[in-house]
Length: 452
Image (cartoon, rainbow, N blue to C red):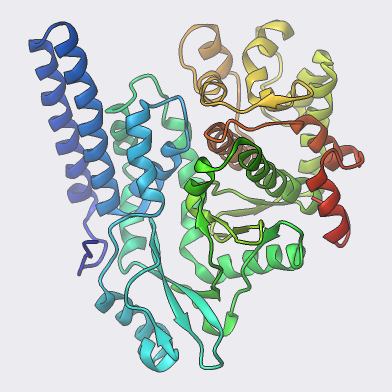
């Protein structure tokens, strides 16, 4: 794997030029498809999608920062991008070009006053994973404990500041691959969350909260943080070994469904049981452990909801599951999702907006890429009655992150084609209903307080 012996760098203009050049290359390729006919034209357009996706992915991976984070989010949106493009972007979740060991060594020495070889008994020079803001290395403490050390890329804070001032360029990059996708809402979400991910002390605080709530859980693991070896730019945590999420795609359907239910319970159980929300649902953050548990290893984007906010969410869910449409309209207006007195009938609003809650509308639902595409498509629509309804919708506090998990999770579970009683599982959380599945019963046996 090629490493970069340089900081993440570039001012606003220089970082803008790379997406512009990328778009220019894509236009030239697309124009070339008009010179072909029949099957040859179809093949050339398939080649256009693949080559452009490779180009976008390489550019995002090299630039790191907000551009790469944007690509990771898009890779979850199954059904909204050509599959070849989505598959290419998915490589950003674990296979980004890493920085060189010399840069890693410099960051650790500046943070602790010691080089890695002195601070740790052993420090692996080759990264375990490279992501949008930092990369992770295996290490061993002097007492023999095995840890994962996340080191932030030098210069990434400045690069992200430039990227976020270039929101239009982010939108243009995805427009190269999918002209029908409204990327503006995704960019707004990205701005809300990414700046908080730059402080590893903040991340360590939230990770510890999750660890304390899931310590000893039947099927969920959260690595313990070593706070004495954590700074704003370096985070040291317990090393958990496991298979990447992509391994789940090769499992029999029954096991894929089990993986899906664990992720679903972790995400929504955290919200409604603990009022905590981990808003970065991409597969690079999930590890399949040999004992059947799943480890959730990244806490850079966490929100803690107030009791009042949770109560508003629960009111909406109860109205949705009972199909009480007048109550549902009142609830989404009260939560700030729909502006009062929108000039549409309740039936018109429901027909368009119900897709956001599609997984819990029936007793059993199968997540598919097609379902994920409908959920995302309706909520980002800009034309027709759906587009007019969306102009009367709002994204209130907290919903930015819930939208991210709802869409991201739909794409993730859609890749598993998981069928389950998602409605009954949600009722466990909001109505204290008895466990609906064996995993629910296992959670109840191993969770202090209300189970997830």
